[in-house]
Amino acid sequence: MVGFALWKRDLKSGAEPPINNRIPPKEGAGSVPDDGISSLLSPIRRCIWFDHSINAGDRMQYRVVPIVAAGGNFQPVDAEASDRSDPNEASAESGAGLAGIFNRGIIMSQAVSRFVQGEVTVARLKNSNRSLPLPASQCGAISPVSYGMRCSIFSPKL
Image 1 (cartoon, rainbow, N blue to C red):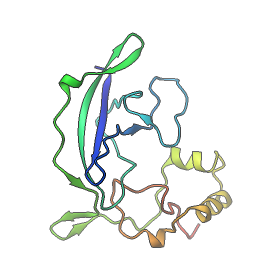
Image 2: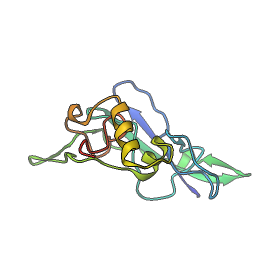
Image 3: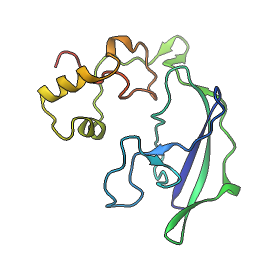
């Protein structure tokens, strides 16, 4: 086994696409597109992963499928796939009256570097922040698994 593919079932739409991986399939393979590439083509090879495609309120289930190397390609082993997880809802609420809320800018180094085309200066960050589609003040409570480029990620006090 070289890694695994992760499948997400959207409980609202019924769609079941594989989760994208943001790490190249092979060492030295260069960068991947900003959205990543299917975990069928670039297996997940670590124990920590994020689903960058969900938003607060989305309901989903996940299924893990082992991936093996086969003739220079990757092949899923469907017979060894896990059952689907219990349904999950993306939410900042964690129970017992606790919630995870981000109130400061988050900088994800690779994503930010791509977003500003490698020009990481205060001026470029300010300009890029203005061009985002939704200001941070309008994002509300964002789930720890759903933050990202849809909301301003740079502190407005830059």
